[in-house]
Amino acid sequence: MRFFAPPSMSLRFFPVWRRNLLVWRKLAIPSILGNLADPLIYVLGLGYGLGSMLPQVGGVPYIAFLAAGMVCSSTMNSATFESMYSAFSRMHVQRTWDAIMNAPVDLDDVVLAELVWAASKSVLSGVAILAVVWLLGLSSSILSLWAILLLPLIGLTFGALALAVTAMARSYDFFMYYFTLVITPMNLLCGVFFPVEQLPAAFQAVALFLPLTHAVAIARPLLLGHVPSDIFLHLGVLLAYAAAGFYAATILFRRRLLK
Amino acid sequence: MAVLAANDLRKSYDGEEVVAGVSFGIQAGECFGLLGPNGAGKTTTLRLCLGLTDPDSGSVELMQRPVPGEARPARARVGVVPQMDNLDPDFSVEENLLVYGRYFGLAERAVRQRIPQLLEFAGLAARAKSRIQTLSGGMKRRLTLARALINDPDLIFMDEPTTGLDPQARHLIWERLKQLLAQGKTIVLTTHFMEEAERLCARLAIMDRGRFITEGSPRDLILRHIEPHVIEVHGDGVMEWADREAGGLATRLEKSGDTAFCYAADPAPLLASLSARQELRYLHRPANLEDVFLKQTGRELRD
Image (cartoon, rainbow over all chains, first blue to last red; front, side, top):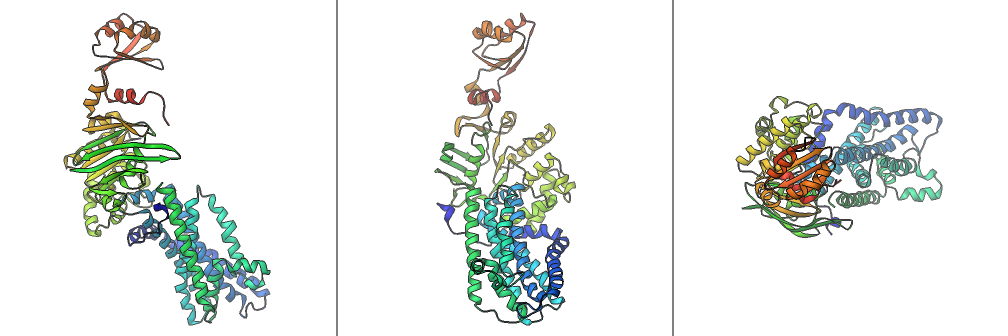
């Protein structure tokens, strides 16, 4: 059955990606500000507020510790949001995908375009937070520049997972489950706000299997000026989640739209 | 030259055969109509032809390419006007055409050059910068038609192109479709407006429950399936009149609601009988495609 064939990837995804870019450009400034506001409030509020009551965390001021977590978390959130609500609107509500697939563009091209677009948009969010982190002097290591290269992988990973959820969604309400059952627990378990080591052993074991843990495990050392340990393990986990999510999304979209 | 050929197409959903062995061929320059009640399998047939879903069995050749295998390059020569509006609401009229042209891999310059001409054709030249939300239903349809022409296709699929339009808008679409036919384009049209099919299509097929139940030119179908005269009668006592008199005078009699449909080769005896019954009102008209359609697919409601 061709439903299970590997995704056919081609440059035909590019005009579809450009379509999304053109829409975004019309709303770019509010979109960037909107994406920036939420994580910034966390960094400043928790970082200075909670941070003032805490001794150092992981050997650095709490706000510096938190900054790396927020870069990863807001990149994840941005990719997730785009792959769910926005992609669902284009697929199901506006029927934009239907129109595109009447042209010589296949569903696989559209799915790839949505994934790359979600990752692109999330990179912008991540870079915006990084810029604030640098401006506030929360990270001054040259190594932190490497974090920019990590952002696309974070975007692809969480964009792909969220697309698989979108492929199963009947309405917007469905996305609430993913946020409450997956995204929120990851934000709390994966070392964004506090070191994973603070958790009971059972939770630590769970955290080890969650992709956000591995994103934070690379980003935090980079921002604090160390070379991350086990870097290939962490990258491997993220890549595996990205590939599995993308494959699952492709199959599920085919089953939904090409049946 | 056949631009589209389907051979014994079959497609089932949940054990129900939606397309149940459909075969047809469409020649270049032809306007072929696919008629049928809701749920007859028209849209699924179109999706199969475009390679948007795989048949359970049977084969399709679109623009001389096997579909779905080579559906993508085949679609490069095809335009589609879908049943549901799916214009891009975030874009202006002009941007909709530009962005759509990119999906065909067309050079940006070529698309930009083509846009004014397409807007002219669609009667939207003054609305190039308008947002989609500000367009009327007729304008949206015309823009969808213009969008389907962005790649200068040889074959255009139109899925119920005038559903929901007012008469003015509908006539304008018909006018444009005739122009396209005059330019040598091929059109495949699904519709449940018989008038539309009669006006535009040189050949048509009536589809029901997944099958083609009859096929031919509109005139052929009327001659083949229906008596030339129809008298629709209603008013007090119509059913009693129908049972007692019309049954013997009409070649065929159908009762639906409070109307009796009398079909006859010679209407004179029926008209004479009616002239004696002042309480009955009637409409005498030539048989049309709708009569064929209703005879072939029945009068009960579909959903």
